[in-house]
Length: 267
Ligand code: ADP
Ligand code: MG
Image (cartoon, rainbow, N blue to C red; front, top):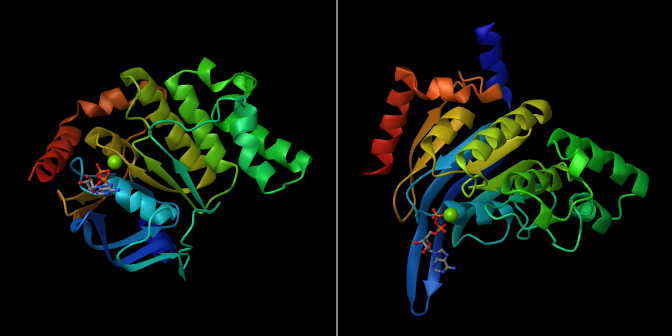
């Protein structure tokens, strides 16, 4: 059985391939190297967590994959083709600070992208309903963003990304501004969405425990200029539903893994 799973895993195609990527920011006459020599494959269905010191280029890498920023050199492929140099519906982005339109209610916010793409009303309503239900916001869909808690806003942002059925969801420290309880809940939400939809997720965090709880792959970056210094396969031994993650966090195995990664990041 294990063998069959291994084969299945190996055969999964790469959604994203990054080769020889460098990014220099121009600051006046000077140039700042933010990313250096990045090679990365993101396999379909994986949950990739990216860890690294502040300022190491994590957001820069996400912005390149999303199409907000062009690399100085190197190549990025989406499903084997050069990535379009503008954002599009195939790459859904969720930021740390939710970017919902304040004048639209939750349902309208989630629906917005579909409306812009002229998806017929009936189809739109079905898809919006499905994803609002998935993130647990169906009962709150008529509320305005200002009426929601931070966790609920992030649920709406996730639903808004999912309705477009993107090839990859890019998340930049999405739970970084939430309090501990809301964060734990949102970790359960994103884990169950990932399981239910089989989506590929690229997830930046500065929380090592979060990466260990969620990531099938953990990528560690060095201080600037950001380079990938280590990649871990994480077997996701932790069932985190119903507050179970707290139980795992105190196990010796978990603490050892956490400390190994923390010491790498502090190098
Ligand atoms: P992280 O998300 O890992 O904290 P960033 O990708 O935001 O890091 O930034 C990487 C480095 O590039 C930082 O040192 C930052 O100051 C610099 N940087 C980010 N954006 C710009 C910009 N637009 N112009 C110049 N330097 C930038
Ligand atoms: Mg950042």
